[in-house]
Image (cartoon, rainbow, N blue to C red; front, top):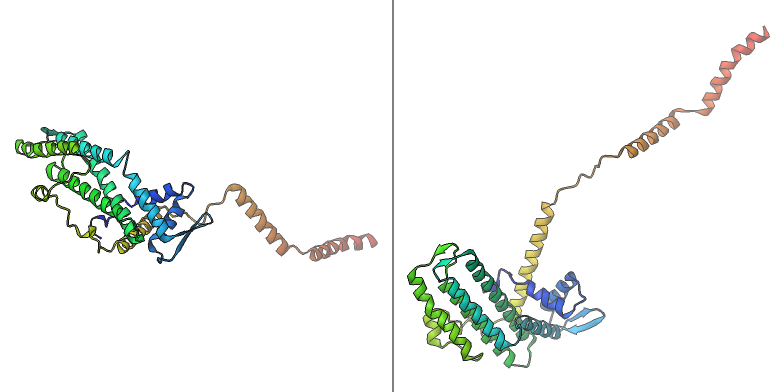
Length: 295
């Protein structure tokens, strides 16, 4: 499974389905996504009395995932990513790492990691649907590589620590990285690192095996979906076991107790009271008085 096996950003897929079908509930979004990924290729996904080809849904999800990563235009989005990366690099190496500096680093890494996952999932959906537009997957691969490179730059040249002093050597090492990130903003969206630059910085992702054409994208989606389902089942079981067990033999309220007593009393009285026996006893009790009167 590689870098996405923890399913950290899987909710991006549920969100994409919910955005495509605004009236869908979360459980229904889960069902649509599960069928789209795990069902056979000729399967039709049905929702709201409408049938969709599996490939059609895959392409819709892919485009929604791509749109979720673009705030304005691809050029502006890439410019903003570089700006945030440069500021993070600067603040994490300016002498002291404050809580705010560290929070900025973590927020930035979270953001680009989520976008990287969304774009990779979009690439997987497009490749699985066998889309004819070959330019879109190529564009996605380029953007995935860029995000991985910037992710590596931040992790390699900033400390994963808070409230510590940064050494002079760390500052000097990070300074050219900051300048490079700023210069990339002026070179335009089409610019990319050279092989020599990538190798020297330790951020080379040009030959990542999961970006090659023969990578099993459809199988990757299926494994990811199954991992997520297993994770959700484990969480449900954990939540169920954490709930307090209710006492099935609940204590009766005073009113219900009184009703029960009256019910039991009625049963007992019915069992022991014999109206014919009572009348016979009454007659027997009256006979001695009548005999006395005759004498």
